[in-house]
Image (cartoon, rainbow, N blue to C red; front, side):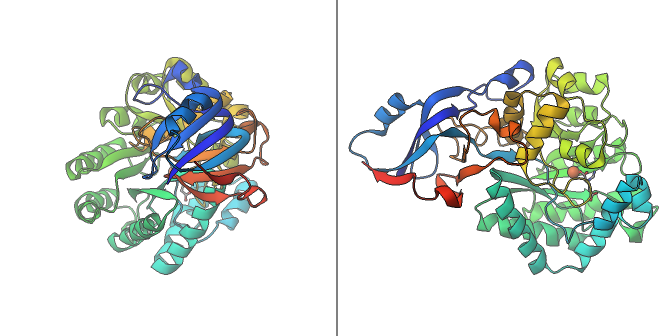
Length: 429
Ligand code: NIG
Ligand code: FE
């Protein structure tokens, strides 16, 4: 049956050019007052716009399910384009060490950090990792996220990386949260190859990547290109191998230091270069006019009490910015895009409109999904979020307290806040 959503106080269509929204374009939400959306039987949008026009298009003789948005804000579900959601447990000792003033490098040297999680994931069964991911997936949905990137990177051996990617595939197939898998074998050097970084990178490119690609287990590769981790030369090698294997590229760049990773990302036509805390002018200029989205993950800066990446400089220079959680047990144990939006506005001085563009359509472009996800235009997937607010600015304003009324994935309601369940849904003709 078709679905007709009416009575959106503000419908944020995110209509715009067919590319990442850059610079001033990031202020445009395609806002329609008293908006409506019509969805077909396949879960694709037929029309979105002012209620009268869309209602006319709904026709008189075709039956549809009517959803009254009750004067709330209706927008695309969040597209969280950077996350590491398959891990074995929290890193609470690291948390305390950091409060005592230890650095990321200190903590790794003390037996914490990425390798602590690798140890846990290697010892965990596929079943328990899948149960864990399912539980997180429910929380992402409740927070309004309808599409999530999911990286591997806590296995660091062929067998363990495949285990993680299979978990992502299985849970993604179950739905309703759509998972986009990224192979992050180049996250750290595993303990058994300590001091042999080049050899590990060779294995990632020549032994792991071909299997990942053959089994269709990932759409992207990613690499932690930073001081103490991998170099731009390593990243370049990986990107070449990925492109031959038909996988797209993403990168963790300039998080701990300036390495030039963002310029490399542009040269490799990566979908996104993420973190960017230490990006320089040459990096910003390279991103401007490119198809590579600047993926900012300010939850990790908040959690580390570190200076934020230069969102204003990026946007004012004309770059396209996406916002993501970077959900992971080490640097950002937050799955909630609402919190990220609030941090983006208050700490990085992004406007609420820019933050919402960054969390929807630009998140979609950061995953190569900009033509199907992240906006409410005809032909796009009906991944729709109804938010308990009359004005979209309330989303980042009521930090830590905002409420999702319901979330729809491909035209199906997949989460409804208990207090408003079913009262707004009825059949219409
Ligand atoms: O995005 N920078 C590398 N990877 C993660 C952290 C992973 C971890 O500490 O477990 C990040 O911050
Ligand atoms: Fe990350």
